[in-house]
Amino acid sequence: MNDALFVYYKIEESQHAHWLQKVRDFQRQLTVAHPTLELELMQRPEASSEKMETWMEIYRHPSGITDAMILSIQELAKSNGLPDKRACEVFIRLV
Image (cartoon, rainbow, N blue to C red; front, side, top):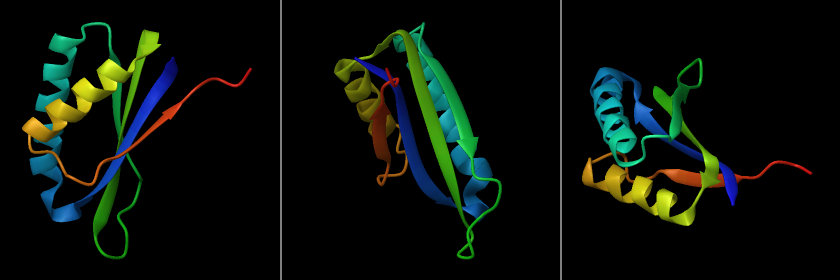
C-alpha cells in the first residue's frame, strides 16, 4: 500500500489562471469519486528561466493510495485535459 502519490508537471506561467481552474475542477471531481481522499496543490515558488511553473498534486488516503485510485486519478486527469506530461511517483513511510 502506498502512503502518498505525487504528481508533478510544468505549465506556462502565462497560463496559470487557466490551469488553476482546470485543476481545481478536476480535484473537485476526485473528491466526489473518492470522498476521503486528501489532496493538495502546490507549486515551486518561482518560474523557470523559460517561464514555466512546476506544479505538484499530492494525494493521500487514510487507508493508503491503491493502484485503483492511482488509475482513477490518471484517467480523470486525462479526461479533463490536464497536461499530458504528468510524472507520477508513489512513496511509502520509512520503517
